[in-house]
Image (cartoon, rainbow, N blue to C red):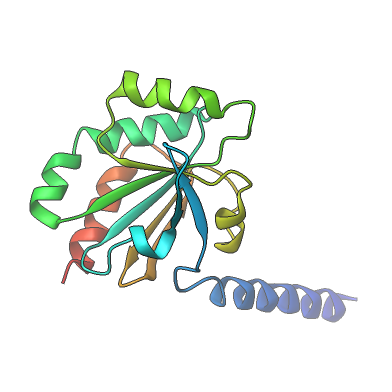
Length: 165
């Protein structure tokens, strides 16, 4: 019985490692919408010449708002020092999308904003929930983190700094 249990634990561990190892490695082709309702191709708005942070968020997600606020206080310095861009991608549904512009204007966030109306892009990236932060360089995913805890913005800065060149 113990051997059977150990074999199953080993097998489940192996499957978990394989699933995580073969996650999305590059930026998939996907269509999003900007705040003016224009259709944009993700690969066209994510520059190959700089590191881009994709921050998946929603108006109803308190940790998402906290993360965007925390990065916002550092963002200008990051742009000057590291030539980084943040694109905030909302996954709000039809009921809550009307709040997006109001929050952006109130918060005065300096980011580029896109909408992932049916969460197709989020799904292509195998992202489970929001907030989700993805760092992209040369259309390759170099870092991904789910959730937000105060101080995560400093870890994000270190990842960007390390991968700048």
